[in-house]
Length: 133
Image (cartoon, rainbow, N blue to C red; front, top):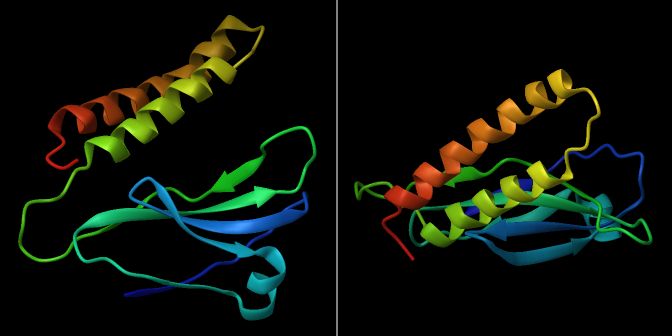
């Protein structure tokens, strides 16, 4: 079990914090509950996997959030578990972000997209080498 706490600074009001484990929301904690305790509780892993923390903003008319990158947890000497579903989750997310990039200056757009394309190649490689799901 991993005890998870977080620090958060936001200009937008936050409604909740979530733990996403191996691609699924496993816990949602209201902002007021988190503010009282500073804790998101524990995350249990029986096998290797990953988790991230996502803060959901309370902004009408949009789904605004912020998240950490994934934290990887390895258990035992088994080969690193690479979940196809989890890698696909991040690949789809990167591709969705690419669609959102709207810059008029082609040089600036290329500069921004080079990082997105690198992330897309990384997650495509993970989908290809996946050994779970």
